[in-house]
Amino acid sequence: MLTVDFLGRQVYGPYIEISKRKGKEKPRRMVVCLYGSGRKVRRKNMAYARWKMECHLKRELLREETVDHDDEDTLNDEIDNLKIMSLGDNIRKSNKGPKIANLICRSCGTSFTRLARRTKDPERSYCSPSCGSKSRLCAG
Image 1 (cartoon, one colour):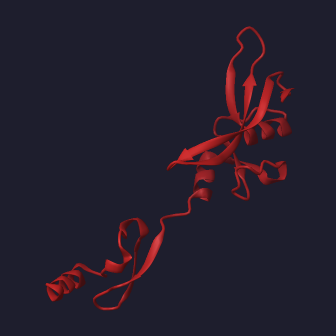
Image 2 (tube, helix red, strand yellow; image 1 turned 45 degrees about the vertical axis):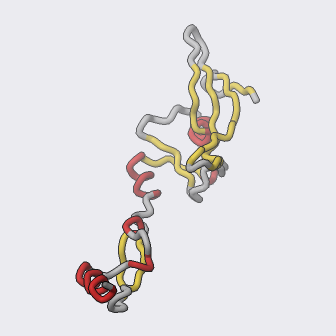
């Protein structure tokens, strides 16, 4: 679809940007393709949410301004779901922190927590190196 925005740029889209991770295709976000007017016609891809917010405010957003989705759904670009934030605030809001695994020691039965990425095999997890070595001594 071709439209012209408040700055006189030709706008094509929106299009769905596909993310290809681990062999799976997943819709990531909506984008638009902008063509400037004047002597130098430049092509620029922009997030649809950012472009929509610019049109709503009738001004270009500053470089340090980002558009945040309140419901964290990047495909929901309704104007009431969008708000402007600084990049740092947006990152802090979206950061969920590390995933924690709750485990039970196979040797002494004590429950303990560990970062999930450091837990290769939950069935063979021990609360401390001493419990792990005790278990290995008894098995061997």
